[in-house]
Length: 299
Image (cartoon, rainbow, N blue to C red; front, side):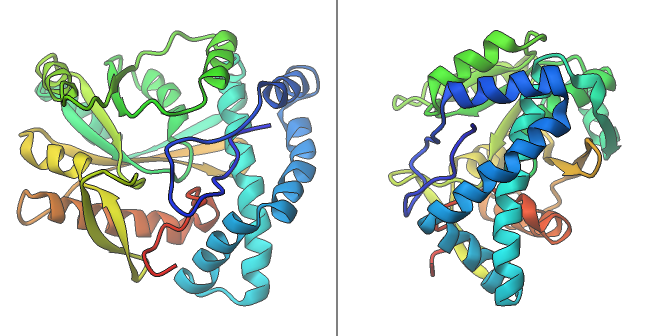
């Protein structure tokens, strides 16, 4: 159905899935409603719960060791996390395929985003693979933030699924992609976007072997993070915001935007502010951690 949780010891930059699965869920949503798609998801999530032993171990560690849950609560939360992840994928497809009005949206910190435009100096957003940041665009449209977002990506995701999602989308995306290149030419694209008052968006929580890395503690244990987003954000003299879009009950989403507050403008300080902010989100939304690999160094 959807992007399959990773089954590797380290994140490889790709997820798995099939277009057929997406087509089935799109059919259910359009003819029987979003909640009908959720009903089928009960069985899909159970399949992953039974078969994905490696990612199960990583997620069990997250609930048991990092959040301090009991063994029973950790197992139950493991299944619920697969189900919640599937819901966010269904919601993304629903919104892109024209069912945006079925959802409600709540804004928390929107004034920080509006200030970026008012000051006409661009800005950096850093998000994570928690919640559903991929549906942030409807939030921006609703508050008249008609700026272009340039998302920095390695472009390693499943292209066939991307093509299908683009084919069903009712909205032409306002964001652009800046692809990371070995010759570092993407740095010039980033600077050009910022000079045109655009917003640069990174995710800061997935390290791929071979990347330059930084270390920081998250939920009480050390992990490895990609240095790039934090090095660039520390060197660019523009505001840095941590932004998340978290799923709540009844087809409701909550956008959070927080200013990165650091004593010194350097990469390590920004990373530590980021992990502190992400911890606050995870304490409130523990089921929306979607890094299905051995995220912590001690795993």
